Length: 128
Image (cartoon, rainbow, N blue to C red; front, side, top):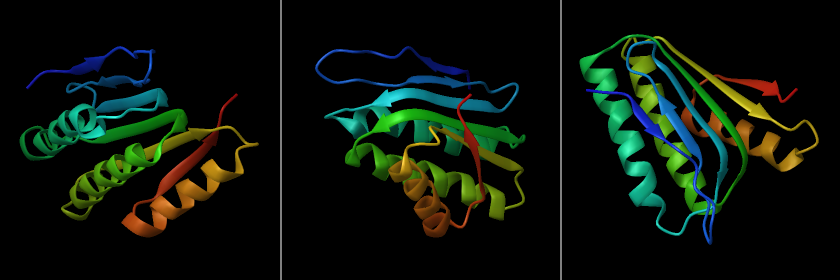
């Protein structure tokens, strides 16, 4: 297993920056996520986390710093949060931090919905 690092791409569609570190357990997705082939981008992230929770089993600090994401991305965020919640329920140590713009009421609602849907505790942290 190795780190998963992806640079953001801007064009017709936008992908976020990804930095999943297998040694530290620090995993971050940041930027904007506006994709057409969302599964192609997010499935490897979900797979990496599943593998990490089975093979490495160290604590995970998962940070989302998305300023925008589309509907298809939201489904994959839910999938990823479910993977983290399963790890948490199996005794894994998980911290989820979600950075957001305090003026973005929709984002705050989305974060709260994810907490309800997954049962995972999400630390809401305003961007500075």
